Amino acid sequence: MVRKLTGAVSLVFLLSACAQTELAMHTAKKFTTSGLEKSKGSYKIGKPYKIKGTWYYPAVNYGYVEKGIASWYGPQFHGKKTANGEIFDMNAVSAAHRTLPMPSIVRVTNLKNGRSLKMKVNDRGPFAKGRIIDLSRRAAQLLGFERSGTALVRVEIDADESRRIAAIAQGKATANLPAPPPQKVVIASLPGSDTKIVSKPPAKPKIKAIDLKGTRPLAIVKQGPVQGGKQIYVQAGAFLYRDLATKMQKLLDPVGPTRVVEAVVGKHRYYRVQVGPAKTVGEGDRLLELVIASGYPKARLVVE
Image (cartoon, rainbow, N blue to C red; front, top):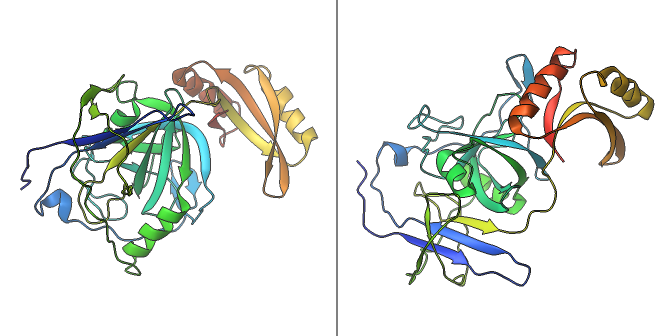
């Protein structure tokens, strides 16, 4: 049974010279060991697995960064076990990813409004075509896309915090997080969300937002300027040789505007064949279906 204690503490970091604001939202509630709080997840990478004809290969990747489309999940999975054995709480901040180790810490940035939020990956998914990460309902609320259902995002792993939380999950380290000091707050409204927030300079030292002891973490939303990453394309393939990319480009011309984009990954230069751009996520989904139906089942949505 959850025992609610009164009080809600939230912080918003003031605008800096580079026009960035950090918004901190912390619900000061203490919980007894209810069903949602008792479950302790294990560290898990997992073997390759196949979903709807597609293979996924979980692996440790502390250099992971990707732009794409995020979705969110909630009531249907609330109270059920996640892929690493934790209990999913749609009112807490967490995420599902197809290949990153569990737990990992990632920062997800909404490319439309500039809000970003660190969260723990403790589940597998999403498995819908064209989605790169699935967030809890609470995370979607804080990032401002609960109503729309999807958002163009940038996902980047926090290598240091991911290593630390992985060590704790494997019993190789202990968690010692001090409680945040009491704060005087001023209530304000967060545009585009039903969440109440408050304005206050950051306390020192900063408390990292990691859920390590089964309690809800301090959720820190960072607001900054958005730079690029607003166009949706369908990427049909990537080649080491431009002539192969050009051949695919010509084959896909009937589907829609097609381009070849160079990209350097590690020591290799790739030529990516992309169709688009699509004006909306829905249009991108339809374009993806057309490309797949044209004989390219590994096509996917990307954000440039």
